Length: 138
Image 1: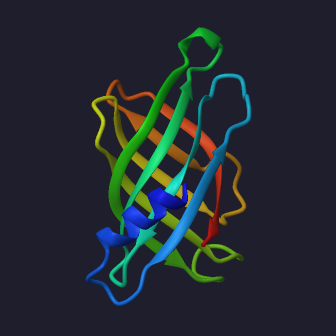
Image 2 (image 1 turned 90 degrees about the horizontal axis):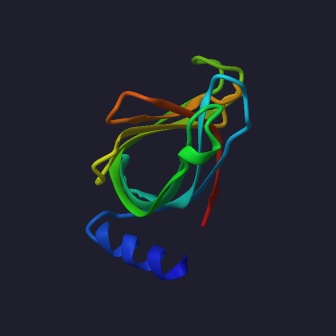
């Protein structure tokens, strides 16, 4: 993971500073809800542009044999920070990401909002996968 952090930091070498986020998403099994688990590293620059690498596992609801695993998916996008009182009583961040992968169209990772299963991945076949995400800043 540290090697990936160094590589991602080099991508943002022209920016003044960069934030490194270790992302982890853990889903709960809820009947009728497709889910995903994810783990990876995201790096944001001074302009909130984001690049990173993520491992993702998707599972369709009530179909345990439908597991798809995507390793070392490169993602790009941007993040937006929301302050306490703007929308929620807590601060939270939202990462809007596109995956360089044929199956995953977009990732909308929301971290810090007190709403269960709010993070979402949309697949090319328009299935929506849900999860709870958190991050750790390096």
